[in-house]
Length: 288
Image (cartoon, rainbow, N blue to C red; front, top):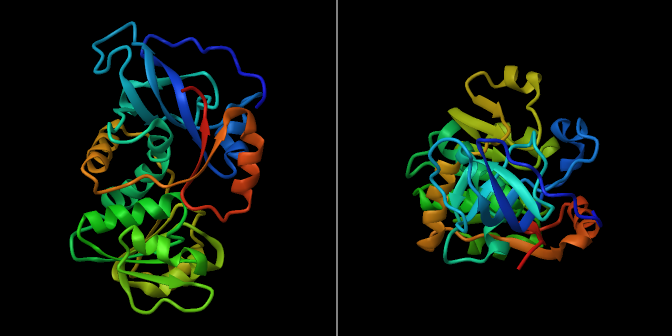
């Protein structure tokens, strides 16, 4: 990640974005969509400025607009000077925050949004359990569920209990010392493994267990036939991102950035991610 790749050439439907910042996701260089490309560029979160608009069709954004997006995993990412984006991926950057803060939002917040509202159809007053509440998706899930009027319980390690509580969780459980008590309409697993397996017993009959960490085991699905279950991968969605941006500008949701690295320190950023102990997102600064 030391030499910057050349500027990409947009198709007739694509915007060219000058990248101000991108955010990294653990293991993204091993994803199926990534390993099929010879020299993949990571970072599918982007916050930047539009350089050129699509050659064909009406454009809802103009040159020099500040935007942010989750871009398709099938294309190269934004750890570069420029990146391409489709119309449906883009949203206007929240005016109240910096590019480094904005770029911490798209993948994490869209994953949480689609889990809670698209798949679980979360309603005010329902009980939500977020397993792994201090990570990128977990921090957004806590805030969005609370914003929607749910009662939110989160799990994390001891040193992050106060942090997760500050995001709006009604109760925070140190998983190293205590067990989760009770049942919930919605359980969101951001961890996988034994944590995911333990989540089944905390879902109410007719409720849903979702994982964004790894697929759920068929044996467990058979053991809990009255519980809906789902593993899914987030999809870019500019319309949803616009709604999230509005919530940010209104002060209802805030980005969570663990650390900001310069682009040339991308390897160090990935090493930090590999330890799995971050709060929120790891960001790469590209352009001022």
